[in-house]
Image 1 (cartoon, each protein chain N blue to C red):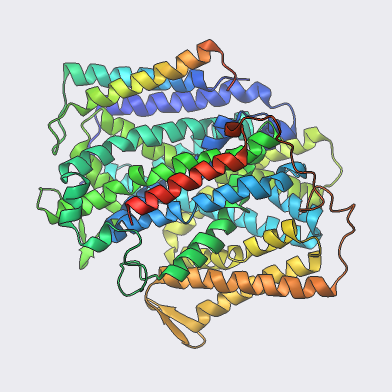
Image 2 (cartoon, chains in turn cyan, purple):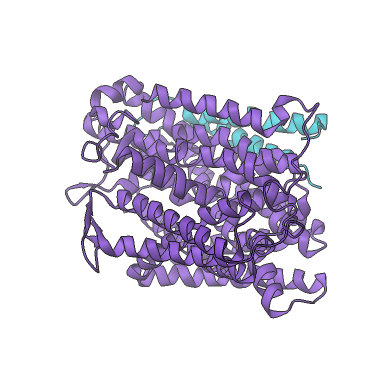
Length: 62
Length: 552
């Protein structure tokens, strides 16, 4: 059976990475916030994705 | 004229998500070897997955968008829909009812009714449920089409067809397993996609204390103004809220609706099935912070002249646009793609939930039950697959029906409410009173539905109802709904008991595994507390009390 942690982890890792790159290189602004929200959210997503992938790699039965 | 403007990076994230959803369906296609694997996931899914799917199948986009809207309209009282209106029922179904659902080996909730009561009770439940799931799936699609038309300027037809085709592809390929797996991905995405909005909007409104200063007290207190219906914007009072929403409606949904029960029944053991709703209650408790807070913040931002304002509508605001207009203000391109994908994901998980529940009930309870009872499993697998296609096609038709005739949809939702209101009484008696009979259950359900319709025709709320006479005037439609539920439940309970006492019950041997007292309860000696449903449920209850006290 497919281990769901692998595709979920990959999705968030890739999407997060894209956000981090956009945040660092372009720093797009939303009208009502000064923060680099793409960068921060991207980092959270990369972290979350990485945790899922690590858990799957350790092969702990879920 | 659209609210949100997408850039290539936003489209990339949306397309990436579609690719993963379809990929999961593709990878799971080989697990579908029997009708059981396709329709019930072969009782083979790990508990963390079933728990999150249990939650996500209910977390449709109307819920996400609607809860933000209610937050802006009613304030923190909206969280009663989670704290009072869901969590207690989720704990109850896990601790007390799952032993009978899972232990009976029934493949669906209507099938349980057949084993416990009789054929006609099952037929009534199966047919009304099948019709209702189709309509709710269609209404969800209609809402998606309208919303994407409004905020993105996409064509209604394209949005409806695109989402339908993708849901069809992954449920057709991998069946219930695929729907459940994707619901978990969708749940993660909903939380990650909407949390930044809650954080950013609340921060901009000056934090929770800033919101408290700017809004009337009634918007930031969940209980203080509930004693009298004239004091709070919902127009409900404590008994209607706790009895109608907290007991009848909430238990009726979470404890009997096959859409959610199906997720728990897919778990790989009795213990996992029982823990599914209990574990799901943890994130459920936290969801108000993700979906309701942005709505409250939107109202505060409007009041403080921050430059943001809820779009006006008539004399008030168009609350339904709270979520998307906030996204336009706080999400730069990139994150906007994530938020939008989360919205799309919530629509899809709602739709897939309905479709997978529909195909199981149709295949096992209607087709196998009444049309072609003795065919090979291969045959039912094919029927299940065809039903998936037909179900989605009918949902699309319903979406267009909703677009054409809004009144018909309002009327149907009203009727569905009447049908659902008494259900919990039937299950409560069925599981905990072995004397309850099939005749009692069937006529109890019909009387409950009748009592609901009668209550509606004899009372008035916001100009709705009262077609026979006006005996009572409710301050809000919500209050009317809660009281309709209370009357329906009571009528069903009383009529079921009366008729059961006058008709012959099933013998004890026929009821083994179906009723309390005749079912071996699972042994839990030596199992650590965190793997047992009851102690976990107590932890949830503790957290629940804590949350209610904070927002008293």
